Figure 1 (cartoon, rainbow, N blue to C red):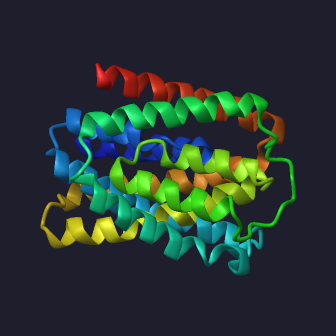
Figure 2: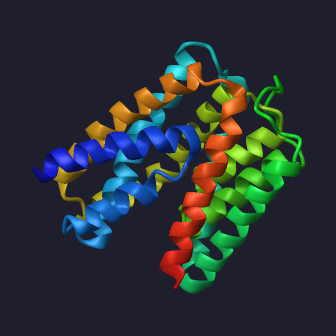
Length: 243
């Protein structure tokens, strides 16, 4: 029964995570409630995210919604950002990271009402003074803490005038890049409980494919309300954990 719950959790969390970010704040608490050790639950998330995020990116790449010329540089920036965040993680207290997460998500929520990004543009993703430090900074945040990484990236790509569907593809590639190293470390350390992890991974791949197909049909004017709802949910959950 627990494998079915984890499988369904993977579908739900990754569908929502693909559309608006924040899927990890659904899957992780449920796995902990089912009795998985914390490191095993985090490791299961990293392994499943690595596979599911690449599957959704590859779907958009295969259907020519995004090009490798635009996307290739996301990989080293996200990996280096994640490594930098991991290096800093032991030097910054967890409660300080919780406060930082709340500040960043609140700032993103407020600027979504006054910013220019609407996910209706046809901008090309290029290395510039906003995209490079933005992706690197979010990579550091992901390595340090993690929850809300995908949501923050969607706000960044919206600000850069990238269409929503292409933004989803770029976020999923960045997620793959930041998770692959962490997943390898958890596997090497023997923390992975494979039956549960495989159940989550199968659900996550299903959710990723479902999410990206919903994204293909989603009207641009609906994106910001969905993203704002996900942001508020993240803020509330992080605030509850902080107190």
